[in-house]
Image: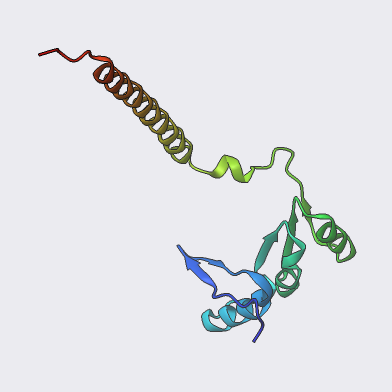
Length: 136
């Protein structure tokens, strides 16, 4: 077995596999479910997926990296280029950003409160020390 082997993921009828065993995993899945790989489609933007793209009858390079673009041209694979690709950052839920901002805000308020409390306490201690004692 390869050192980078990862278990394939199956979610909602979609198949996800990472690292260097994609081709083998695709063949196993096709055999298990009776898929004709020659009639299957695969889409990728990364040269790391070339073995998987080689496995199917309809490979597509989508906004490919340099090496995948070169290989796609050599093998006459269709190349899809989107002028406005979706960035990973835009796919991160905004609730995460709101939660981080809220956490920073709460932390700032807590720090301000602790500072205020410390200053007030120090002033009280100074007043206590400066109070003259009564003479008998």
